[in-house]
Amino acid sequence: MINDVPVQERKTFTLSSKPDNTEETYSMAPVSQFAQNLLSKMGFQQGQPIGKNPYKSSALLKPIEFQSRGDREGLGVNPMKTYKYVGEKEKQDNDKFQDVVILSGKYKKMKGVKLDVIKTQGQSDTYIIELKSNGEKIKIAADQVVEAKLYKEEKSRSRSKSKSQKQLKWITSGIVVKVKNKHYQGGKFYNKKISISDVQDEYTFSALGSHGELIEDLKEKDVKVTLPKKGGRVCIVKGEFKGELGQFVEKREKKIVLVKLENGRLFEFEKKSVCRLI
Image (cartoon, rainbow, N blue to C red; front, side):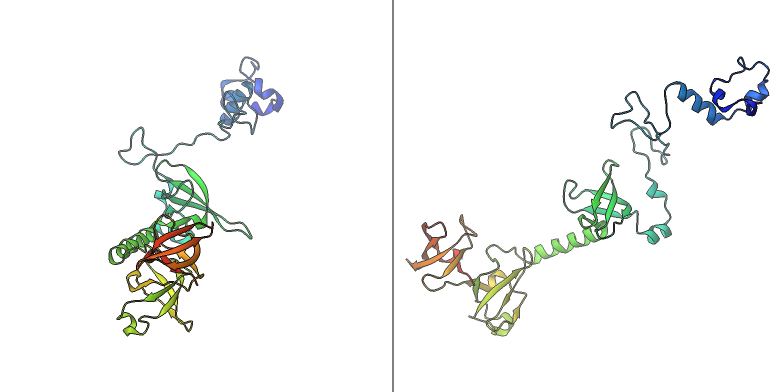
């Protein structure tokens, strides 16, 4: 019987080497052991990658597993992903297999499916994402990913906002402007100077009144630029030098002012292109 053959000799065990054994004895030899013996004779060792060049990064350490295809899916089509077969209850229970969109980095705006979450104490979570475009699996920080549903909702809100509001062209934080809209908040702030405290996005900004009160829901058309006294600090808000800081020198013509930029050079600007700094 095969059990009577020492383990060390089982590699070379055949019917011819042990003529006293029968076909019944041969059939009792484990199939897994038979395959292992064949691989061992070809130089394979347990835990060693498979392939002609086992030390290359492309060498296989684990065998390629069979993946079934869906109905009417032929050659050249990626096999259906395992997450498609997961029950709805399990999807809700473990927060995995969600459709997501990547917000930044190399894979920005690419869609994928969250397969797993890696939690590390003291650090933010990392997601294992399978890209829908090519099936590639990547690791990415949780704050770089958003659920596809939320991404669509935010995109829809942005489109609605862009239709109803005009983008800001010259407003920036840190400048002093004057309210020119007589009807804004019933004229409470008409012709008064306010300080732009924060530009929230490309459409909206907030400001502070002379007594520190918060002013919101302003539009760019509601305000106009102001100028300081001679020698006061200004910011260029339009044109080629937009964002440059300088010193107000004097008014030239009705709509022209002279400004000394921080590099020491003097330039003439349209009055509406220059605004007082806080």
